[in-house]
Amino acid sequence: MLGFIRSRNFILKIIVAIVFIYFFGLMLRITLDYVPISSNVSFLMIKQTEVTSRPEYLPIFYAHVYSSIFALMAGFIAVFFDKNLKYLHQFSGRVYVFTTLLFSSLSGIYIGVFANGGWIAKVSFVILGILWFYTTYRSFTEIRKRNIQQHKFWMWRSYALALSAITLRMWKVILVYLFHPNPMDVYQIIAWLGWVPNFLLVDYLIKKQKR
Amino acid sequence: MKHLNLIFASLIFSVALISCKKEKTEIAGTKPQKDSLAANQNPEVHKEMYGIYYGYFSPEDNLNDGEYTEEDMVKKISIKINKITKDSVYGQSVLNGNQRTFRGVLNENTNSFVLDEPGDDKTDGRFDVKMKGDSLVGSWTAFNQSAVRVKHKTLKLEKKEFVYNPNFMLDKDTDVVDWTSHKTKKVSYGKNDDGTEESYETDQQRYATDAIFKINASKQKLTEKDLKNLPKLDMEIIKNAIFARHGYSFKKETFRQFFNQSAWYVPVSNNVDAELSPLEKENAALLNRFIKYAEDHYDTFGR
Image 1: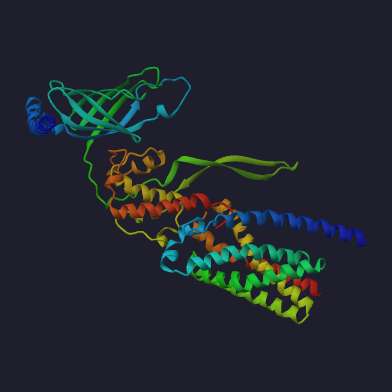
Image 2 (image 1 turned 90 degrees about the vertical axis):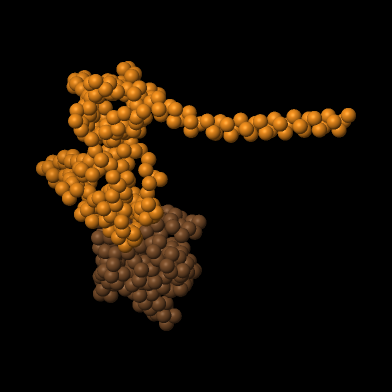
Protein backbone atom coordinates (compact mmCIF):
# COMPACT_ATOMS: atom_id res chain seq x y z
CA MET A 1 0.00 0.00 0.00
CA LEU A 2 2.75 2.40 1.02
CA GLY A 3 4.69 1.49 -2.08
CA PHE A 4 1.66 2.15 -4.25
CA ILE A 5 1.11 5.61 -2.75
CA ARG A 6 4.77 6.42 -3.08
CA SER A 7 4.90 5.39 -6.72
CA ARG A 8 1.70 7.27 -7.49
CA ASN A 9 3.12 10.40 -5.89
CA PHE A 10 6.33 9.85 -7.77
CA ILE A 11 4.52 9.71 -11.12
CA LEU A 12 2.49 12.79 -10.20
CA LYS A 13 5.67 14.66 -9.35
CA ILE A 14 7.24 13.68 -12.66
CA ILE A 15 4.19 14.98 -14.53
CA VAL A 16 4.21 18.24 -12.55
CA ALA A 17 7.90 18.69 -13.29
CA ILE A 18 7.44 18.07 -17.02
CA VAL A 19 4.51 20.49 -17.24
CA PHE A 20 6.45 23.10 -15.33
CA ILE A 21 9.53 22.73 -17.50
CA TYR A 22 7.39 23.16 -20.61
CA PHE A 23 5.81 26.37 -19.38
CA PHE A 24 9.08 27.60 -17.93
CA GLY A 25 10.53 27.19 -21.41
CA LEU A 26 7.77 29.40 -22.79
CA MET A 27 8.42 32.00 -20.12
CA LEU A 28 12.14 31.85 -20.82
CA ARG A 29 11.46 32.49 -24.50
CA ILE A 30 9.37 35.52 -23.63
CA THR A 31 12.16 36.76 -21.36
CA LEU A 32 14.77 36.29 -24.06
CA ASP A 33 12.78 38.62 -26.31
CA TYR A 34 14.11 41.32 -23.99
CA VAL A 35 17.75 40.41 -24.57
CA PRO A 36 19.51 42.63 -25.44
CA ILE A 37 17.82 45.48 -23.60
CA SER A 38 15.72 47.58 -25.94
CA SER A 39 13.26 50.35 -25.23
CA ASN A 40 10.65 49.30 -27.79
CA VAL A 41 10.62 45.54 -28.10
CA SER A 42 7.68 43.15 -27.56
CA PHE A 43 5.35 44.37 -24.78
CA LEU A 44 7.19 47.72 -24.73
CA MET A 45 5.94 48.35 -28.28
CA ILE A 46 2.63 49.43 -26.79
CA LYS A 47 4.16 51.04 -23.70
CA GLN A 48 5.98 53.95 -25.29
CA THR A 49 3.87 56.51 -23.43
CA GLU A 50 5.31 55.29 -20.12
CA VAL A 51 8.78 54.57 -21.52
CA THR A 52 9.20 58.09 -22.88
CA SER A 53 7.50 60.03 -20.10
CA ARG A 54 8.81 58.13 -17.05
CA PRO A 55 12.57 57.59 -16.95
CA GLU A 56 12.23 55.04 -14.12
CA TYR A 57 9.76 52.84 -16.02
CA LEU A 58 12.27 51.03 -18.22
CA PRO A 59 14.78 50.07 -15.47
CA ILE A 60 11.97 48.87 -13.19
CA PHE A 61 10.33 46.96 -16.03
CA TYR A 62 13.61 45.22 -16.83
CA ALA A 63 14.23 44.51 -13.13
CA HIS A 64 10.86 42.74 -13.14
CA VAL A 65 11.48 40.76 -16.33
CA TYR A 66 15.01 39.63 -15.50
CA SER A 67 14.48 38.86 -11.80
CA SER A 68 11.14 37.09 -12.18
CA ILE A 69 12.46 34.34 -14.41
CA PHE A 70 14.92 33.40 -11.63
CA ALA A 71 12.22 33.63 -8.98
CA LEU A 72 10.00 31.33 -11.05
CA MET A 73 12.69 28.65 -11.33
CA ALA A 74 14.08 29.00 -7.78
CA GLY A 75 10.60 28.89 -6.27
CA PHE A 76 9.73 25.74 -8.18
CA ILE A 77 12.88 23.96 -7.04
CA ALA A 78 12.26 25.00 -3.42
CA VAL A 79 8.67 23.76 -3.42
CA PHE A 80 9.48 20.61 -5.40
CA PHE A 81 12.33 19.49 -3.12
CA ASP A 82 10.68 20.48 0.15
CA LYS A 83 11.59 17.32 2.06
CA ASN A 84 14.66 15.92 0.40
CA LEU A 85 17.83 17.57 -0.82
CA LYS A 86 17.82 19.98 2.09
CA TYR A 87 20.76 21.99 0.85
CA LEU A 88 19.16 22.56 -2.57
CA HIS A 89 15.87 23.50 -0.89
CA GLN A 90 17.56 26.09 1.30
CA PHE A 91 19.66 27.55 -1.46
CA SER A 92 16.83 27.87 -4.01
CA GLY A 93 14.50 29.12 -1.26
CA ARG A 94 16.92 31.89 -0.37
CA VAL A 95 17.25 32.88 -4.03
CA TYR A 96 13.44 32.93 -4.35
CA VAL A 97 12.86 35.03 -1.23
CA PHE A 98 15.70 37.40 -2.06
CA THR A 99 14.69 38.06 -5.71
CA THR A 100 10.97 38.19 -4.96
CA LEU A 101 11.14 40.57 -2.01
CA LEU A 102 13.80 42.86 -3.40
CA PHE A 103 13.01 42.91 -7.10
CA SER A 104 10.12 40.98 -8.60
CA SER A 105 7.21 41.85 -6.32
CA LEU A 106 8.13 45.50 -5.75
CA SER A 107 8.76 46.14 -9.45
CA GLY A 108 5.54 44.25 -10.15
CA ILE A 109 3.58 46.66 -7.96
CA TYR A 110 5.13 49.62 -9.76
CA ILE A 111 4.38 48.39 -13.29
CA GLY A 112 0.96 47.31 -12.04
CA VAL A 113 0.18 50.96 -11.37
CA PHE A 114 0.77 51.66 -15.07
CA ALA A 115 -0.81 48.46 -16.35
CA ASN A 116 -2.87 48.27 -19.53
CA GLY A 117 -6.58 47.72 -19.16
CA GLY A 118 -7.56 50.66 -16.98
CA TRP A 119 -8.20 50.65 -13.25
CA ILE A 120 -9.80 47.18 -13.29
CA ALA A 121 -6.48 45.66 -14.32
CA LYS A 122 -4.36 48.07 -12.29
CA VAL A 123 -6.13 47.24 -9.01
CA SER A 124 -5.68 43.54 -9.69
CA PHE A 125 -1.98 43.76 -10.44
CA VAL A 126 -1.25 46.00 -7.47
CA ILE A 127 -3.10 43.67 -5.08
CA LEU A 128 -1.28 40.72 -6.64
CA GLY A 129 2.07 42.42 -6.08
CA ILE A 130 1.29 43.33 -2.47
CA LEU A 131 0.02 39.82 -1.67
CA TRP A 132 3.04 38.28 -3.33
CA PHE A 133 5.37 40.40 -1.22
CA TYR A 134 3.42 39.75 1.97
CA THR A 135 3.09 35.97 1.58
CA THR A 136 6.76 35.63 0.69
CA TYR A 137 7.76 37.76 3.64
CA ARG A 138 5.54 35.76 6.04
CA SER A 139 6.98 32.51 4.80
CA PHE A 140 10.46 33.87 5.40
CA THR A 141 9.70 34.97 8.99
CA GLU A 142 8.00 31.64 9.78
CA ILE A 143 11.07 29.63 8.82
CA ARG A 144 13.27 31.92 10.88
CA LYS A 145 11.07 30.92 13.80
CA ARG A 146 11.54 27.29 12.70
CA ASN A 147 7.79 27.03 12.18
CA ILE A 148 7.97 24.62 9.31
CA GLN A 149 4.26 24.02 8.64
CA GLN A 150 3.39 27.69 8.56
CA HIS A 151 6.47 28.33 6.43
CA LYS A 152 5.26 25.72 3.99
CA PHE A 153 1.72 27.10 3.76
CA TRP A 154 2.82 30.67 3.27
CA MET A 155 5.28 29.57 0.63
CA TRP A 156 2.54 27.67 -1.18
CA ARG A 157 0.49 30.84 -1.26
CA SER A 158 3.45 32.87 -2.40
CA TYR A 159 4.36 30.49 -5.19
CA ALA A 160 0.74 30.13 -6.31
CA LEU A 161 0.83 33.87 -6.89
CA ALA A 162 4.17 33.62 -8.68
CA LEU A 163 2.65 31.01 -11.00
CA SER A 164 0.07 33.59 -12.08
CA ALA A 165 2.73 34.62 -14.61
CA ILE A 166 1.98 31.33 -16.35
CA THR A 167 -1.73 30.93 -15.61
CA LEU A 168 -2.51 34.47 -16.75
CA ARG A 169 -0.98 33.78 -20.14
CA MET A 170 -2.72 30.41 -20.37
CA TRP A 171 -6.08 32.02 -19.75
CA LYS A 172 -5.31 34.59 -22.39
CA VAL A 173 -4.66 31.95 -25.04
CA ILE A 174 -7.87 30.13 -24.08
CA LEU A 175 -10.08 33.23 -24.01
CA VAL A 176 -8.70 34.61 -27.26
CA TYR A 177 -9.17 31.27 -28.97
CA LEU A 178 -12.76 30.94 -27.79
CA PHE A 179 -14.14 34.48 -27.98
CA HIS A 180 -11.75 36.73 -29.96
CA PRO A 181 -12.29 39.61 -27.53
CA ASN A 182 -10.71 43.01 -27.97
CA PRO A 183 -7.18 43.03 -26.56
CA MET A 184 -7.84 45.12 -23.48
CA ASP A 185 -11.14 43.41 -22.68
CA VAL A 186 -9.31 40.12 -22.38
CA TYR A 187 -6.58 41.86 -20.42
CA GLN A 188 -8.98 43.05 -17.73
CA ILE A 189 -10.31 39.53 -17.34
CA ILE A 190 -6.97 37.73 -17.19
CA ALA A 191 -5.63 40.31 -14.74
CA TRP A 192 -7.96 38.72 -12.17
CA LEU A 193 -8.27 35.23 -13.63
CA GLY A 194 -4.49 34.90 -13.55
CA TRP A 195 -4.13 34.78 -9.78
CA VAL A 196 -7.47 34.60 -7.93
CA PRO A 197 -8.24 30.94 -8.83
CA ASN A 198 -4.64 30.01 -8.00
CA PHE A 199 -5.00 31.61 -4.60
CA LEU A 200 -8.34 29.92 -3.89
CA LEU A 201 -7.03 26.54 -5.01
CA VAL A 202 -3.96 26.74 -2.80
CA ASP A 203 -6.11 27.84 0.13
CA TYR A 204 -8.26 24.77 -0.39
CA LEU A 205 -5.16 22.55 -0.43
CA ILE A 206 -3.92 24.14 2.79
CA LYS A 207 -7.25 23.58 4.52
CA LYS A 208 -7.18 19.96 3.36
CA GLN A 209 -3.67 19.49 4.77
CA LYS A 210 -4.61 21.01 8.13
CA ARG A 211 -7.42 18.54 8.61
CA MET B 1 60.37 78.85 -76.37
CA LYS B 2 59.25 76.66 -73.56
CA HIS B 3 57.41 79.56 -72.02
CA LEU B 4 55.76 80.43 -75.27
CA ASN B 5 54.54 76.87 -75.62
CA LEU B 6 53.10 77.00 -72.17
CA ILE B 7 51.35 80.29 -72.82
CA PHE B 8 50.02 78.95 -76.07
CA ALA B 9 48.78 75.80 -74.47
CA SER B 10 47.07 77.59 -71.65
CA LEU B 11 45.52 79.96 -74.18
CA ILE B 12 44.06 77.08 -76.14
CA PHE B 13 42.86 75.52 -72.91
CA SER B 14 41.16 78.67 -71.69
CA VAL B 15 39.55 79.27 -75.07
CA ALA B 16 38.30 75.74 -75.05
CA LEU B 17 36.96 76.25 -71.57
CA ILE B 18 35.16 79.46 -72.48
CA SER B 19 33.67 78.00 -75.62
CA CYS B 20 32.60 75.00 -73.67
CA LYS B 21 30.84 77.18 -71.17
CA LYS B 22 29.27 79.14 -73.95
CA GLU B 23 27.96 76.02 -75.55
CA LYS B 24 26.34 75.04 -72.31
CA THR B 25 24.64 78.36 -71.87
CA GLU B 26 23.56 78.23 -75.45
CA ILE B 27 21.91 74.87 -74.91
CA ALA B 28 20.26 76.12 -71.77
CA GLY B 29 19.13 79.16 -73.65
CA THR B 30 17.62 77.31 -76.56
CA LYS B 31 15.84 74.68 -74.51
CA PRO B 32 12.75 76.60 -73.46
CA GLN B 33 12.53 77.96 -76.97
CA LYS B 34 12.48 74.46 -78.33
CA ASP B 35 9.84 73.48 -75.81
CA SER B 36 7.58 76.35 -76.68
CA LEU B 37 8.13 75.51 -80.30
CA ALA B 38 7.04 71.96 -79.63
CA ALA B 39 4.09 73.24 -77.69
CA ASN B 40 3.14 75.44 -80.60
CA GLN B 41 3.34 72.55 -82.97
CA ASN B 42 1.40 70.30 -80.62
CA PRO B 43 -1.12 72.43 -78.78
CA GLU B 44 -3.11 70.70 -76.10
CA VAL B 45 -6.63 69.91 -77.15
CA HIS B 46 -9.74 68.70 -75.42
CA LYS B 47 -8.60 69.75 -71.99
CA GLU B 48 -12.15 69.13 -70.84
CA MET B 49 -11.46 65.42 -71.16
CA TYR B 50 -8.55 65.53 -68.70
CA GLY B 51 -9.18 63.84 -65.43
CA ILE B 52 -9.75 60.57 -63.68
CA TYR B 53 -12.19 57.94 -64.87
CA TYR B 54 -12.98 55.24 -62.38
CA GLY B 55 -15.19 52.20 -62.61
CA TYR B 56 -15.63 48.56 -63.48
CA PHE B 57 -13.14 46.46 -65.36
CA SER B 58 -14.73 43.11 -66.09
CA PRO B 59 -13.74 39.99 -68.00
CA GLU B 60 -15.54 40.18 -71.33
CA ASP B 61 -16.80 36.68 -71.62
CA ASN B 62 -17.16 33.80 -69.31
CA LEU B 63 -14.38 31.42 -70.21
CA ASN B 64 -16.22 28.46 -68.73
CA ASP B 65 -13.05 26.46 -68.43
CA GLY B 66 -13.83 25.42 -64.91
CA GLU B 67 -11.21 27.66 -63.43
CA TYR B 68 -11.91 30.71 -61.37
CA THR B 69 -8.94 32.77 -60.41
CA GLU B 70 -8.22 36.32 -59.45
CA GLU B 71 -8.19 37.17 -63.17
CA ASP B 72 -11.87 36.35 -63.51
CA MET B 73 -12.97 38.88 -60.95
CA VAL B 74 -14.59 42.18 -61.71
CA LYS B 75 -12.17 44.87 -60.65
CA LYS B 76 -12.18 48.61 -60.43
CA ILE B 77 -9.75 50.55 -62.57
CA SER B 78 -8.73 54.19 -62.82
CA ILE B 79 -7.76 55.78 -66.10
CA LYS B 80 -6.08 59.11 -65.69
CA ILE B 81 -5.79 61.32 -68.77
CA ASN B 82 -3.06 63.88 -68.21
CA LYS B 83 -2.47 65.44 -71.63
CA ILE B 84 -4.02 65.34 -75.07
CA THR B 85 -2.38 66.82 -78.17
CA LYS B 86 -3.20 66.47 -81.84
CA ASP B 87 -1.20 63.28 -82.17
CA SER B 88 -0.74 61.93 -78.66
CA VAL B 89 -2.57 61.16 -75.45
CA TYR B 90 -0.66 60.72 -72.18
CA GLY B 91 -1.86 59.23 -68.94
CA GLN B 92 -1.85 56.24 -66.66
CA SER B 93 -3.97 53.35 -65.56
CA VAL B 94 -4.14 52.25 -61.93
CA LEU B 95 -5.49 48.82 -61.07
CA ASN B 96 -5.12 47.17 -57.66
CA GLY B 97 -1.94 49.01 -56.88
CA ASN B 98 -0.46 48.43 -60.32
CA GLN B 99 0.19 51.77 -61.97
CA ARG B 100 1.02 51.81 -65.70
CA THR B 101 1.67 54.81 -67.89
CA PHE B 102 0.12 54.76 -71.33
CA ARG B 103 0.40 56.65 -74.59
CA GLY B 104 -2.07 56.73 -77.38
CA VAL B 105 -4.16 58.74 -79.79
CA LEU B 106 -7.53 60.40 -79.82
CA ASN B 107 -9.84 60.24 -82.80
CA GLU B 108 -11.57 63.58 -82.53
CA ASN B 109 -14.39 62.64 -84.90
CA THR B 110 -15.59 59.72 -82.84
CA ASN B 111 -14.21 60.80 -79.45
CA SER B 112 -12.49 57.46 -79.13
CA PHE B 113 -9.11 56.67 -77.70
CA VAL B 114 -6.60 53.98 -78.45
CA LEU B 115 -4.25 53.78 -75.48
CA ASP B 116 -1.25 51.47 -75.15
CA GLU B 117 0.41 50.46 -71.92
CA PRO B 118 4.23 50.14 -72.11
CA GLY B 119 4.22 46.39 -72.85
CA ASP B 120 6.99 45.30 -70.52
CA ASP B 121 4.54 43.75 -68.08
CA LYS B 122 2.62 40.61 -68.97
CA THR B 123 -0.63 42.27 -67.93
CA ASP B 124 -0.11 45.26 -70.25
CA GLY B 125 -2.48 45.81 -73.09
CA ARG B 126 -4.41 48.22 -75.29
CA PHE B 127 -7.47 50.19 -74.28
CA ASP B 128 -10.08 50.96 -76.96
CA VAL B 129 -12.35 53.39 -75.20
CA LYS B 130 -14.90 55.97 -76.17
CA MET B 131 -15.91 59.14 -74.36
CA LYS B 132 -19.66 59.39 -73.88
CA GLY B 133 -20.52 62.45 -71.91
CA ASP B 134 -18.76 62.00 -68.60
CA SER B 135 -18.12 58.31 -68.97
CA LEU B 136 -15.48 56.30 -70.66
CA VAL B 137 -16.51 52.92 -72.03
CA GLY B 138 -14.83 50.32 -74.15
CA SER B 139 -12.56 47.36 -73.97
CA TRP B 140 -9.08 46.22 -73.19
CA THR B 141 -7.02 43.59 -74.97
CA ALA B 142 -3.87 42.01 -73.61
CA PHE B 143 -0.78 42.40 -75.80
CA ASN B 144 0.53 39.01 -74.86
CA GLN B 145 -2.40 36.72 -75.50
CA SER B 146 -0.62 33.64 -74.20
CA ALA B 147 0.52 35.15 -70.90
CA VAL B 148 -2.91 35.88 -69.47
CA ARG B 149 -6.02 33.77 -69.21
CA VAL B 150 -8.52 36.59 -69.56
CA LYS B 151 -7.54 38.31 -72.80
CA HIS B 152 -10.41 40.74 -73.19
CA LYS B 153 -12.05 42.97 -70.67
CA THR B 154 -14.68 45.66 -70.81
CA LEU B 155 -14.51 49.01 -69.11
CA LYS B 156 -17.28 51.17 -67.82
CA LEU B 157 -15.83 54.21 -66.12
CA GLU B 158 -17.27 57.41 -64.73
CA LYS B 159 -15.42 60.67 -64.46
CA LYS B 160 -14.40 61.25 -60.86
CA GLU B 161 -12.99 64.26 -59.12
CA PHE B 162 -10.08 63.38 -56.88
CA VAL B 163 -9.60 65.70 -53.93
CA TYR B 164 -7.74 65.10 -50.73
CA ASN B 165 -9.82 65.93 -47.72
CA PRO B 166 -8.71 64.89 -44.22
CA ASN B 167 -12.33 64.89 -43.08
CA PHE B 168 -13.34 61.96 -45.28
CA MET B 169 -14.44 58.99 -43.21
CA LEU B 170 -15.64 55.57 -44.27
CA ASP B 171 -19.27 55.61 -45.27
CA LYS B 172 -21.49 54.85 -42.28
CA ASP B 173 -23.16 52.01 -44.17
CA THR B 174 -19.90 50.22 -44.90
CA ASP B 175 -20.14 46.48 -44.49
CA VAL B 176 -17.77 45.77 -41.60
CA VAL B 177 -17.23 42.09 -42.39
CA ASP B 178 -13.94 41.31 -44.04
CA TRP B 179 -15.10 38.96 -46.78
CA THR B 180 -11.68 38.62 -48.31
CA SER B 181 -9.97 36.55 -45.66
CA HIS B 182 -11.26 33.96 -43.30
CA LYS B 183 -10.20 31.18 -41.04
CA THR B 184 -11.81 27.77 -41.09
CA LYS B 185 -12.79 26.60 -37.68
CA LYS B 186 -13.96 23.19 -36.59
CA VAL B 187 -17.10 23.29 -34.53
CA SER B 188 -18.11 20.23 -32.59
CA TYR B 189 -21.69 18.96 -32.44
CA GLY B 190 -20.79 16.90 -29.43
CA LYS B 191 -20.09 13.24 -29.02
CA ASN B 192 -21.82 10.43 -30.86
CA ASP B 193 -23.12 7.32 -29.15
CA ASP B 194 -20.00 5.44 -30.13
CA GLY B 195 -17.81 8.16 -28.64
CA THR B 196 -16.54 9.66 -31.91
CA GLU B 197 -16.78 13.36 -32.23
CA GLU B 198 -19.10 14.95 -34.76
CA SER B 199 -17.95 18.25 -36.14
CA TYR B 200 -18.40 20.53 -39.07
CA GLU B 201 -16.20 23.22 -40.54
CA THR B 202 -17.27 26.78 -40.67
CA ASP B 203 -15.77 29.97 -42.02
CA GLN B 204 -14.85 32.57 -39.51
CA GLN B 205 -14.92 36.07 -40.80
CA ARG B 206 -13.17 39.00 -39.23
CA TYR B 207 -15.20 42.08 -38.71
CA ALA B 208 -14.32 45.64 -37.86
CA THR B 209 -15.85 47.56 -34.99
CA ASP B 210 -17.36 51.02 -34.72
CA ALA B 211 -13.94 52.51 -34.13
CA ILE B 212 -13.30 52.65 -37.88
CA PHE B 213 -16.07 55.26 -38.18
CA LYS B 214 -14.84 57.32 -35.26
CA ILE B 215 -11.06 57.49 -35.31
CA ASN B 216 -9.60 59.74 -37.99
CA ALA B 217 -5.83 59.35 -38.25
CA SER B 218 -5.59 62.26 -40.70
CA LYS B 219 -6.93 64.77 -38.19
CA GLN B 220 -6.32 63.77 -34.60
CA LYS B 221 -3.02 62.95 -32.98
CA LEU B 222 -3.45 59.34 -31.91
CA THR B 223 -2.15 58.10 -28.58
CA GLU B 224 -1.38 54.58 -27.41
CA LYS B 225 -4.46 54.77 -25.23
CA ASP B 226 -6.68 55.32 -28.29
CA LEU B 227 -5.44 52.12 -29.92
CA LYS B 228 -4.86 49.65 -27.10
CA ASN B 229 -8.27 48.03 -27.17
CA LEU B 230 -8.68 47.86 -30.94
CA PRO B 231 -8.59 44.62 -32.91
CA LYS B 232 -5.96 44.39 -35.61
CA LEU B 233 -8.41 44.84 -38.49
CA ASP B 234 -9.65 48.15 -37.04
CA MET B 235 -6.13 49.50 -36.78
CA GLU B 236 -5.32 48.38 -40.31
CA ILE B 237 -8.38 50.18 -41.65
CA ILE B 238 -7.76 53.32 -39.60
CA LYS B 239 -4.20 53.39 -40.91
CA ASN B 240 -5.15 52.70 -44.51
CA ALA B 241 -7.86 55.35 -44.43
CA ILE B 242 -4.98 57.84 -44.43
CA PHE B 243 -3.70 56.35 -47.66
CA ALA B 244 -7.19 56.04 -49.15
CA ARG B 245 -7.78 59.77 -48.63
CA HIS B 246 -4.65 60.43 -50.69
CA GLY B 247 -5.95 58.22 -53.49
CA TYR B 248 -3.77 55.19 -52.85
CA SER B 249 -4.62 52.14 -54.92
CA PHE B 250 -4.54 49.14 -52.60
CA LYS B 251 -2.85 45.90 -53.54
CA LYS B 252 -4.67 44.10 -50.75
CA GLU B 253 -8.24 43.15 -51.48
CA THR B 254 -9.41 43.67 -47.90
CA PHE B 255 -8.81 47.39 -48.10
CA ARG B 256 -10.27 47.73 -51.59
CA GLN B 257 -13.40 46.05 -50.28
CA PHE B 258 -13.72 48.49 -47.39
CA PHE B 259 -12.85 51.74 -49.18
CA ASN B 260 -14.68 51.04 -52.43
CA GLN B 261 -17.87 51.41 -50.42
CA SER B 262 -17.20 55.12 -49.90
CA ALA B 263 -18.02 57.45 -52.79
CA TRP B 264 -15.07 59.73 -52.08
CA TYR B 265 -12.51 56.97 -52.59
CA VAL B 266 -10.77 57.36 -55.93
CA PRO B 267 -7.53 55.42 -56.32
CA VAL B 268 -5.13 57.43 -58.41
CA SER B 269 -1.65 56.32 -57.43
CA ASN B 270 0.35 53.38 -56.19
CA ASN B 271 2.57 55.55 -54.02
CA VAL B 272 1.32 58.44 -51.94
CA ASP B 273 4.04 58.43 -49.26
CA ALA B 274 5.22 61.89 -50.26
CA GLU B 275 1.74 63.35 -49.86
CA LEU B 276 1.31 62.40 -46.20
CA SER B 277 1.18 65.21 -43.66
CA PRO B 278 3.56 65.06 -40.66
CA LEU B 279 0.60 64.17 -38.43
CA GLU B 280 -0.44 61.35 -40.75
CA LYS B 281 3.13 60.02 -40.84
CA GLU B 282 3.33 60.00 -37.05
CA ASN B 283 -0.01 58.26 -36.72
CA ALA B 284 0.86 55.70 -39.39
CA ALA B 285 4.08 54.86 -37.54
CA LEU B 286 2.21 54.43 -34.26
CA LEU B 287 -0.45 52.31 -35.95
CA ASN B 288 2.23 50.16 -37.59
CA ARG B 289 3.75 49.46 -34.20
CA PHE B 290 0.40 48.43 -32.74
CA ILE B 291 -0.49 46.31 -35.77
CA LYS B 292 2.83 44.51 -35.46
CA TYR B 293 2.21 43.97 -31.75
CA ALA B 294 -1.27 42.60 -32.42
CA GLU B 295 0.13 40.26 -35.07
CA ASP B 296 2.90 38.91 -32.85
CA HIS B 297 1.13 38.78 -29.51
CA TYR B 298 -2.66 38.84 -29.68
CA ASP B 299 -3.27 35.08 -29.65
CA THR B 300 0.04 33.77 -28.37
CA PHE B 301 1.27 32.79 -24.93
CA GLY B 302 2.42 36.15 -23.65
CA ARG B 303 1.02 39.58 -23.01
